[in-house]
Length: 253
Image 1 (cartoon, rainbow, N blue to C red):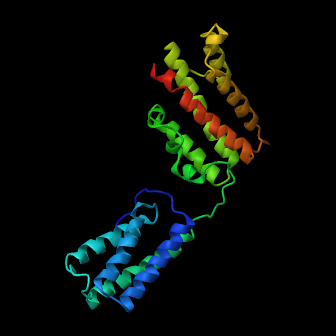
Image 2: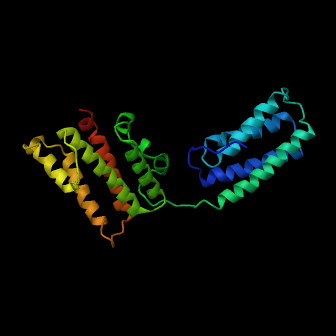
Image 3: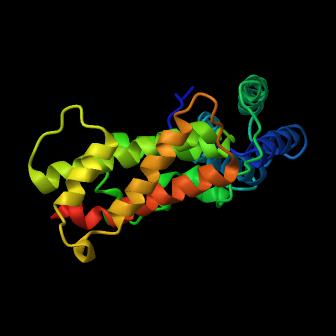
């Protein structure tokens, strides 16, 4: 079988459709096994190859569709018994494998006040390419993890991870602006030094005020008894996204 690779996150609807496709393919193999019918269901199954944890089924269906298509070039041909048995065996195996995989998944009803499809797609759907490209890989990963936490209603974790990314951007901004390497300076110390680099308040980037607000939020949720709610986590995530957009020009100078 083809090994699983990363793809889009499966939804409950994807799992339902996959199960229904297996049923339809088995019905075709038992009753109307013209190649046109079998090819249709294999083609539908092959579309799962872009879905994480389900793509092994889609890739294998695509292989069967291409291999059998070399021999059954006429849609009206009935496929041979040996080929029918091979496909039936694969479908039965796949149904069992899907059942086992489903036991490992958790169904979640996200409470974050954000577009669910964008959260599933990760930070890349919240930023333009030029903004995304400014981020370091670990910063992109952090925001993807924050989005995943929002999907699963882990709001405190979502906030903390997003804020860690904001601090990383602040530190890179400081180093870019000053040319100095940071050691153990804290968020507030770095902000104070950056503010001093803009003595005229009118020339001070507004992003510094946003970063100062986020520092305060980070201090609040660092308290062991602090628990974030959906509104707080959503606001912090969007504010960090705003920082990513805003500091792009500063980091590219």
